Image (tube, rainbow, N blue to C red; front, side):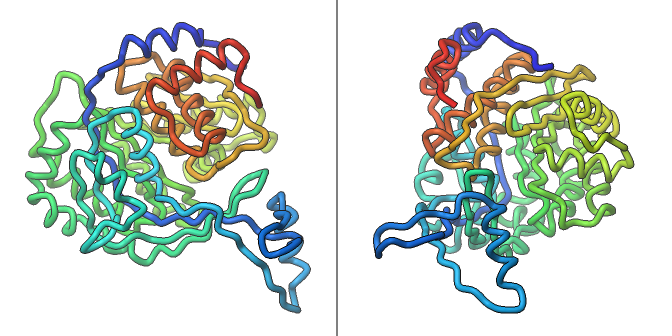
Length: 380
Protein backbone atom coordinates (compact mmCIF):
# COMPACT_ATOMS: atom_id res chain seq x y z
CA UNK A 1 0.00 0.00 0.00
CA UNK A 2 1.49 3.31 -1.07
CA UNK A 3 1.56 6.09 1.48
CA UNK A 4 0.29 9.52 0.40
CA UNK A 5 2.31 12.48 1.58
CA UNK A 6 0.80 15.91 1.00
CA UNK A 7 2.05 17.19 -2.37
CA UNK A 8 1.15 20.76 -1.50
CA UNK A 9 3.09 20.46 1.75
CA UNK A 10 6.12 19.19 -0.17
CA UNK A 11 5.92 22.09 -2.62
CA UNK A 12 5.78 24.47 0.33
CA UNK A 13 8.70 22.78 2.06
CA UNK A 14 10.78 23.09 -1.10
CA UNK A 15 9.88 26.76 -1.44
CA UNK A 16 11.38 27.20 2.02
CA UNK A 17 14.62 25.49 0.93
CA UNK A 18 15.35 27.90 -1.93
CA UNK A 19 18.88 29.26 -1.84
CA UNK A 20 20.23 26.10 -0.19
CA UNK A 21 23.97 25.43 -0.19
CA UNK A 22 24.99 21.82 -0.69
CA UNK A 23 28.37 20.46 -1.71
CA UNK A 24 28.49 17.05 -3.43
CA UNK A 25 31.14 14.94 -5.15
CA UNK A 26 29.98 12.39 -7.74
CA UNK A 27 31.77 9.78 -9.86
CA UNK A 28 33.13 7.63 -11.29
CA UNK A 29 32.00 6.79 -14.82
CA UNK A 30 31.33 8.65 -18.07
CA UNK A 31 29.69 7.67 -21.37
CA UNK A 32 28.67 9.27 -24.61
CA UNK A 33 25.09 8.09 -25.11
CA UNK A 34 23.46 7.82 -28.52
CA UNK A 35 19.70 7.45 -28.09
CA UNK A 36 18.55 5.33 -31.03
CA UNK A 37 15.28 4.07 -32.48
CA UNK A 38 15.10 0.83 -34.48
CA UNK A 39 13.48 1.16 -37.89
CA UNK A 40 10.48 -1.07 -38.58
CA UNK A 41 9.36 0.32 -41.96
CA UNK A 42 10.93 3.22 -43.84
CA UNK A 43 8.64 5.32 -46.02
CA UNK A 44 11.38 7.49 -47.54
CA UNK A 45 14.79 8.90 -46.63
CA UNK A 46 13.25 11.16 -43.93
CA UNK A 47 10.34 9.12 -42.55
CA UNK A 48 10.04 5.76 -40.85
CA UNK A 49 8.02 3.88 -38.23
CA UNK A 50 9.96 2.53 -35.29
CA UNK A 51 9.88 -0.93 -33.73
CA UNK A 52 7.72 -0.10 -30.71
CA UNK A 53 8.58 -2.80 -28.15
CA UNK A 54 11.52 -4.87 -26.98
CA UNK A 55 9.50 -8.04 -27.58
CA UNK A 56 8.98 -7.15 -31.24
CA UNK A 57 12.67 -6.36 -31.67
CA UNK A 58 13.55 -9.65 -30.00
CA UNK A 59 11.22 -11.57 -32.30
CA UNK A 60 12.82 -9.97 -35.36
CA UNK A 61 16.28 -10.93 -34.13
CA UNK A 62 15.12 -14.49 -33.39
CA UNK A 63 13.76 -14.88 -36.91
CA UNK A 64 17.29 -14.22 -38.23
CA UNK A 65 18.77 -17.21 -36.38
CA UNK A 66 20.55 -19.46 -38.89
CA UNK A 67 20.15 -16.77 -41.55
CA UNK A 68 21.12 -13.09 -41.36
CA UNK A 69 19.42 -9.73 -41.24
CA UNK A 70 20.06 -6.01 -41.52
CA UNK A 71 18.65 -3.60 -38.96
CA UNK A 72 18.79 0.19 -39.07
CA UNK A 73 19.34 2.35 -36.01
CA UNK A 74 18.51 6.04 -36.19
CA UNK A 75 20.23 8.33 -33.69
CA UNK A 76 17.64 10.72 -32.28
CA UNK A 77 19.92 12.33 -29.68
CA UNK A 78 23.57 12.31 -28.62
CA UNK A 79 24.02 13.24 -24.99
CA UNK A 80 26.16 12.80 -21.92
CA UNK A 81 25.73 9.38 -20.37
CA UNK A 82 26.78 7.22 -17.50
CA UNK A 83 25.10 7.06 -14.13
CA UNK A 84 27.48 9.59 -12.60
CA UNK A 85 27.20 12.32 -15.25
CA UNK A 86 23.40 12.03 -15.57
CA UNK A 87 23.02 12.17 -11.78
CA UNK A 88 25.43 15.11 -11.66
CA UNK A 89 23.69 16.98 -14.45
CA UNK A 90 20.39 16.70 -12.59
CA UNK A 91 21.96 17.87 -9.32
CA UNK A 92 23.60 20.81 -11.08
CA UNK A 93 20.23 21.85 -12.49
CA UNK A 94 19.01 21.92 -8.91
CA UNK A 95 21.84 24.25 -7.91
CA UNK A 96 24.20 21.90 -6.05
CA UNK A 97 27.91 22.83 -5.82
CA UNK A 98 29.37 19.75 -7.47
CA UNK A 99 32.75 18.12 -8.03
CA UNK A 100 32.98 15.36 -10.63
CA UNK A 101 35.53 12.53 -10.83
CA UNK A 102 35.45 10.12 -13.77
CA UNK A 103 36.19 9.60 -17.44
CA UNK A 104 34.95 12.60 -19.36
CA UNK A 105 37.85 12.81 -21.84
CA UNK A 106 41.61 13.37 -21.90
CA UNK A 107 43.43 15.59 -22.55
CA UNK A 108 40.24 17.55 -23.36
CA UNK A 109 36.73 17.10 -22.01
CA UNK A 110 34.45 15.51 -24.65
CA UNK A 111 31.97 18.08 -26.05
CA UNK A 112 28.89 16.32 -24.60
CA UNK A 113 30.24 16.89 -21.07
CA UNK A 114 31.41 20.48 -21.49
CA UNK A 115 28.15 22.17 -20.36
CA UNK A 116 28.18 20.01 -17.22
CA UNK A 117 31.88 20.63 -16.60
CA UNK A 118 31.43 24.38 -16.97
CA UNK A 119 28.73 24.40 -14.26
CA UNK A 120 30.68 22.13 -11.88
CA UNK A 121 32.87 23.50 -9.12
CA UNK A 122 35.69 21.13 -10.15
CA UNK A 123 36.21 18.23 -12.57
CA UNK A 124 38.85 15.50 -12.41
CA UNK A 125 38.77 13.59 -15.71
CA UNK A 126 40.91 10.46 -15.53
CA UNK A 127 40.26 8.83 -18.94
CA UNK A 128 38.22 8.97 -22.14
CA UNK A 129 34.50 8.13 -21.95
CA UNK A 130 32.83 4.88 -22.84
CA UNK A 131 30.11 4.74 -25.49
CA UNK A 132 26.51 3.49 -25.35
CA UNK A 133 23.87 2.93 -28.00
CA UNK A 134 20.66 3.23 -25.96
CA UNK A 135 17.90 1.59 -27.99
CA UNK A 136 14.65 3.05 -26.67
CA UNK A 137 11.23 1.41 -26.91
CA UNK A 138 7.81 2.15 -25.50
CA UNK A 139 8.26 -0.57 -22.87
CA UNK A 140 11.90 -0.05 -21.89
CA UNK A 141 15.40 0.25 -23.27
CA UNK A 142 18.38 -1.89 -24.24
CA UNK A 143 21.81 -0.41 -23.47
CA UNK A 144 24.61 -1.58 -25.78
CA UNK A 145 27.86 -0.37 -24.29
CA UNK A 146 31.58 -0.21 -25.00
CA UNK A 147 33.28 -0.07 -21.61
CA UNK A 148 37.00 -0.58 -22.21
CA UNK A 149 38.13 2.89 -21.02
CA UNK A 150 36.56 2.37 -17.59
CA UNK A 151 39.48 0.15 -16.60
CA UNK A 152 41.54 3.33 -16.29
CA UNK A 153 39.50 4.55 -13.32
CA UNK A 154 41.70 3.38 -10.43
CA UNK A 155 42.60 4.46 -6.91
CA UNK A 156 46.09 5.49 -8.07
CA UNK A 157 44.60 7.59 -10.88
CA UNK A 158 42.34 9.33 -8.37
CA UNK A 159 45.23 10.00 -6.00
CA UNK A 160 47.41 11.35 -8.80
CA UNK A 161 44.66 13.75 -9.88
CA UNK A 162 43.45 14.90 -6.47
CA UNK A 163 46.57 15.31 -4.33
CA UNK A 164 46.85 11.86 -2.84
CA UNK A 165 44.70 10.27 -0.14
CA UNK A 166 44.87 13.51 1.84
CA UNK A 167 43.37 15.46 -1.07
CA UNK A 168 40.57 12.91 -1.48
CA UNK A 169 39.88 13.00 2.27
CA UNK A 170 39.74 16.82 2.24
CA UNK A 171 37.20 16.66 -0.58
CA UNK A 172 35.10 14.14 1.38
CA UNK A 173 35.24 16.33 4.50
CA UNK A 174 33.65 19.17 2.53
CA UNK A 175 30.82 17.03 1.11
CA UNK A 176 27.22 16.74 2.16
CA UNK A 177 27.00 13.75 -0.19
CA UNK A 178 29.55 11.51 -1.93
CA UNK A 179 28.10 9.54 -4.84
CA UNK A 180 29.85 6.53 -6.37
CA UNK A 181 28.02 5.24 -9.42
CA UNK A 182 28.26 2.25 -11.73
CA UNK A 183 30.03 -0.42 -9.69
CA UNK A 184 29.11 -3.07 -12.28
CA UNK A 185 31.00 -1.52 -15.21
CA UNK A 186 33.99 -0.18 -13.28
CA UNK A 187 36.34 -3.15 -12.78
CA UNK A 188 38.35 -1.39 -10.06
CA UNK A 189 35.49 0.13 -8.04
CA UNK A 190 35.67 -2.39 -5.19
CA UNK A 191 39.42 -1.77 -4.97
CA UNK A 192 38.74 1.98 -4.85
CA UNK A 193 36.27 1.47 -1.98
CA UNK A 194 38.75 -0.73 -0.09
CA UNK A 195 41.43 1.93 -0.42
CA UNK A 196 39.04 4.69 0.63
CA UNK A 197 38.33 2.73 3.80
CA UNK A 198 42.03 2.01 4.41
CA UNK A 199 43.66 5.30 3.33
CA UNK A 200 40.94 7.99 3.28
CA UNK A 201 38.89 7.17 6.38
CA UNK A 202 41.76 7.68 8.88
CA UNK A 203 42.39 11.16 7.42
CA UNK A 204 38.75 12.32 7.57
CA UNK A 205 37.38 14.53 10.31
CA UNK A 206 34.62 13.31 12.62
CA UNK A 207 31.44 15.30 12.04
CA UNK A 208 28.40 15.78 14.28
CA UNK A 209 26.20 14.55 11.43
CA UNK A 210 27.90 12.13 9.08
CA UNK A 211 27.63 12.97 5.36
CA UNK A 212 25.69 10.76 2.97
CA UNK A 213 27.38 8.26 0.66
CA UNK A 214 25.19 7.14 -2.24
CA UNK A 215 25.92 3.92 -4.16
CA UNK A 216 24.43 2.76 -7.47
CA UNK A 217 25.42 -0.69 -8.73
CA UNK A 218 23.99 -0.23 -12.27
CA UNK A 219 22.64 -3.71 -13.11
CA UNK A 220 25.05 -6.20 -11.47
CA UNK A 221 23.66 -9.26 -13.29
CA UNK A 222 26.89 -9.88 -15.21
CA UNK A 223 29.04 -9.89 -12.04
CA UNK A 224 29.50 -13.04 -9.94
CA UNK A 225 27.59 -13.51 -6.71
CA UNK A 226 30.89 -13.55 -4.86
CA UNK A 227 31.88 -10.14 -6.25
CA UNK A 228 28.45 -8.66 -5.49
CA UNK A 229 28.46 -10.02 -1.93
CA UNK A 230 31.93 -8.59 -1.31
CA UNK A 231 30.81 -5.19 -2.65
CA UNK A 232 27.78 -5.19 -0.34
CA UNK A 233 30.08 -5.80 2.64
CA UNK A 234 32.28 -2.87 1.58
CA UNK A 235 29.25 -0.57 1.33
CA UNK A 236 28.36 -1.57 4.89
CA UNK A 237 31.82 -0.48 6.06
CA UNK A 238 31.17 3.05 4.80
CA UNK A 239 28.88 3.48 7.81
CA UNK A 240 32.03 4.23 9.83
CA UNK A 241 32.28 7.71 8.26
CA UNK A 242 29.07 8.14 6.25
CA UNK A 243 25.36 7.43 6.25
CA UNK A 244 25.38 4.88 3.43
CA UNK A 245 22.52 4.81 0.92
CA UNK A 246 22.19 2.06 -1.71
CA UNK A 247 19.93 2.76 -4.68
CA UNK A 248 18.43 -0.14 -6.66
CA UNK A 249 15.80 -0.67 -9.31
CA UNK A 250 13.35 -3.52 -8.78
CA UNK A 251 15.31 -6.03 -10.87
CA UNK A 252 18.47 -5.26 -8.89
CA UNK A 253 16.62 -5.65 -5.57
CA UNK A 254 15.75 -9.26 -6.33
CA UNK A 255 19.29 -9.94 -7.60
CA UNK A 256 20.74 -8.68 -4.31
CA UNK A 257 18.17 -10.76 -2.42
CA UNK A 258 19.47 -13.82 -4.28
CA UNK A 259 23.05 -12.95 -3.32
CA UNK A 260 22.08 -12.84 0.36
CA UNK A 261 20.04 -16.04 0.08
CA UNK A 262 16.80 -14.18 0.76
CA UNK A 263 13.83 -16.04 -0.71
CA UNK A 264 10.86 -14.19 -2.20
CA UNK A 265 7.57 -14.93 -3.91
CA UNK A 266 8.03 -14.74 -7.68
CA UNK A 267 4.70 -12.89 -7.98
CA UNK A 268 6.60 -9.76 -6.79
CA UNK A 269 3.44 -8.11 -5.43
CA UNK A 270 3.63 -4.88 -3.38
CA UNK A 271 3.72 -7.06 -0.26
CA UNK A 272 6.66 -9.04 -1.68
CA UNK A 273 8.42 -5.77 -2.58
CA UNK A 274 8.06 -4.51 0.99
CA UNK A 275 9.16 -7.78 2.61
CA UNK A 276 12.17 -8.17 0.30
CA UNK A 277 13.26 -4.55 0.67
CA UNK A 278 13.18 -4.84 4.47
CA UNK A 279 15.12 -8.11 4.47
CA UNK A 280 17.79 -6.80 2.08
CA UNK A 281 18.08 -3.64 4.20
CA UNK A 282 18.63 -5.75 7.32
CA UNK A 283 21.29 -7.82 5.55
CA UNK A 284 23.16 -4.69 4.41
CA UNK A 285 23.31 -2.92 7.77
CA UNK A 286 23.28 0.59 6.27
CA UNK A 287 21.42 3.86 6.84
CA UNK A 288 19.06 3.62 3.85
CA UNK A 289 18.03 1.29 1.03
CA UNK A 290 15.98 2.92 -1.73
CA UNK A 291 14.26 1.05 -4.58
CA UNK A 292 12.58 2.57 -7.63
CA UNK A 293 10.23 0.27 -9.56
CA UNK A 294 8.49 1.78 -12.60
CA UNK A 295 5.21 2.78 -10.95
CA UNK A 296 6.29 3.37 -7.35
CA UNK A 297 9.31 4.06 -5.13
CA UNK A 298 10.16 2.80 -1.67
CA UNK A 299 12.89 3.03 0.92
CA UNK A 300 13.85 1.81 4.36
CA UNK A 301 15.41 4.29 6.79
CA UNK A 302 16.28 3.21 10.34
CA UNK A 303 14.25 0.06 9.81
CA UNK A 304 11.03 1.83 8.75
CA UNK A 305 9.51 1.17 5.32
CA UNK A 306 8.15 3.98 3.16
CA UNK A 307 6.43 3.70 -0.23
CA UNK A 308 4.87 6.21 -2.64
CA UNK A 309 3.26 6.00 -6.07
CA UNK A 310 4.78 8.04 -8.86
CA UNK A 311 3.33 10.12 -11.71
CA UNK A 312 3.52 7.24 -14.20
CA UNK A 313 3.96 8.16 -17.86
CA UNK A 314 2.72 5.56 -20.37
CA UNK A 315 4.51 7.09 -23.37
CA UNK A 316 7.69 8.79 -22.16
CA UNK A 317 9.72 11.07 -24.41
CA UNK A 318 12.98 9.76 -22.90
CA UNK A 319 13.62 6.95 -20.40
CA UNK A 320 17.43 6.65 -20.48
CA UNK A 321 18.50 8.44 -17.31
CA UNK A 322 15.13 8.29 -15.55
CA UNK A 323 16.54 6.23 -12.68
CA UNK A 324 19.47 8.61 -12.25
CA UNK A 325 17.06 11.54 -12.13
CA UNK A 326 15.04 9.74 -9.47
CA UNK A 327 18.26 9.25 -7.51
CA UNK A 328 19.10 12.95 -7.89
CA UNK A 329 15.75 14.01 -6.45
CA UNK A 330 15.89 11.47 -3.63
CA UNK A 331 19.49 12.33 -2.70
CA UNK A 332 18.69 16.04 -2.77
CA UNK A 333 15.69 15.42 -0.53
CA UNK A 334 17.75 13.54 2.05
CA UNK A 335 20.49 16.18 1.88
CA UNK A 336 17.94 18.94 2.49
CA UNK A 337 16.67 17.11 5.56
CA UNK A 338 13.27 16.12 4.12
CA UNK A 339 11.38 13.22 5.66
CA UNK A 340 11.84 9.92 3.76
CA UNK A 341 8.35 10.07 2.19
CA UNK A 342 9.01 13.56 0.89
CA UNK A 343 12.45 12.56 -0.39
CA UNK A 344 10.82 9.68 -2.30
CA UNK A 345 8.23 12.04 -3.70
CA UNK A 346 10.91 14.49 -4.84
CA UNK A 347 12.63 11.53 -6.52
CA UNK A 348 9.57 10.40 -8.49
CA UNK A 349 8.73 14.02 -9.36
CA UNK A 350 12.25 14.56 -10.75
CA UNK A 351 12.05 11.44 -12.91
CA UNK A 352 8.44 12.19 -13.83
CA UNK A 353 9.42 15.60 -15.16
CA UNK A 354 12.47 14.14 -16.94
CA UNK A 355 10.65 11.42 -18.91
CA UNK A 356 8.05 13.93 -20.10
CA UNK A 357 10.48 16.72 -21.06
CA UNK A 358 13.72 14.85 -21.94
CA UNK A 359 15.74 17.05 -19.57
CA UNK A 360 16.22 17.43 -15.83
CA UNK A 361 14.14 20.04 -14.00
CA UNK A 362 15.36 23.13 -12.21
CA UNK A 363 14.34 23.60 -8.59
CA UNK A 364 11.53 25.97 -9.62
CA UNK A 365 10.37 23.57 -12.35
CA UNK A 366 10.10 20.59 -10.00
CA UNK A 367 8.14 22.69 -7.48
CA UNK A 368 5.75 23.68 -10.29
CA UNK A 369 5.52 20.04 -11.44
CA UNK A 370 4.63 18.91 -7.91
CA UNK A 371 1.98 21.62 -7.75
CA UNK A 372 0.52 20.55 -11.09
CA UNK A 373 0.52 16.91 -9.96
CA UNK A 374 -1.34 17.90 -6.80
CA UNK A 375 -3.92 19.71 -8.96
CA UNK A 376 -4.37 16.74 -11.30
CA UNK A 377 -2.72 18.53 -14.22
CA UNK A 378 0.07 15.98 -14.87
CA UNK A 379 -1.00 13.64 -17.66
CA UNK A 380 -0.03 9.98 -17.79
